[in-house]
Length: 141
Image (cartoon, rainbow, N blue to C red; front, side, top):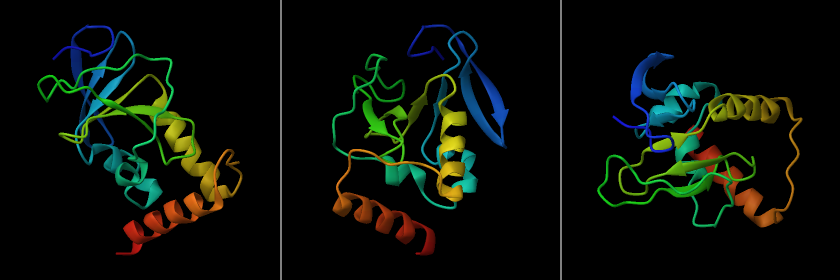
């Protein structure tokens, strides 16, 4: 398989029990549906579903094509809506592309939430309550 960013060959690595396609050149990783949730077990919820929205998100990295779905552009989404971590998502198959260090940034963000030390900017109170309700529902359903 070929990296959607730098076109180098991806290699399979096992991370936390998950077989992940990783690019040794650019440091990106390809995740199939549910693998992000499995890698971020410490979140205690469905971070994949809670991150998907229809808002446009600026990202310095160009849009990439899904390697699983023919002629399908991946969508830019914001991890847990307010994190400023922009990842690529395929609405057709549910796959994710994480660029270098995004997984570690996600883990740090989850720790900040748990510690109550993260700061949310540029949001409306209603949207925040809606997102928190979705997270709570995914945890306790």
